[in-house]
Image (cartoon, rainbow, N blue to C red; front, side, top):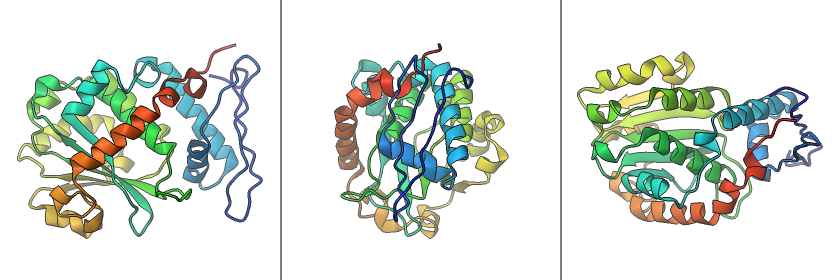
Length: 275
């Protein structure tokens, strides 16, 4: 993608709440749309620097269009997506931390490694984030979170799962996370870590930047150490919190994803055609 292919402009006349009156303008060959909240996330992620936000958007769309099998050819209701969401939980939790961080919770709902399709699962996660990033972080509130906290429950995750990783999909995902994610990752918590954690980490460590690796906390002894970093009340009931049962929270978000199906599949929001 070069400047002749696509040009993004974010117009930064903003009101007292610093909400830019903005839009994305593309080349005459292809007029693309971008969700207003998603555009605001790019802008906020780059500390309201218009030029840096423009660069981040360009990188984001470049990666998306370079790997359409993960980012473009998708349907949250098709058979492969249903399989992903049946065996894995990827659930944005309600509320924000006192720092205004949003929490997303991950765990295996079915420990059978044969259910894992790493490329399809990566596609599923991207759909989860794309759906969340076009939705408010709080009900009835258009304000955005200041960062992202991810929690991974490692219960049931085995070396057989690690053996099913697609190195190419892992590389693409990490590239997207490092270079193009429209929110700032603040920390990543791994809970219920198995005794063979070091062997699991050795598989993915070459793909993780030093900056991201420094954000990872490994909780090996007890979930109690998680409460030192994350407000307990924001966690699902099963993890000592009061946010509700994870299965109920997941069902609610899956309905949101289904409602956003047209948005996720509409090429006008995601695809860039060369001139």
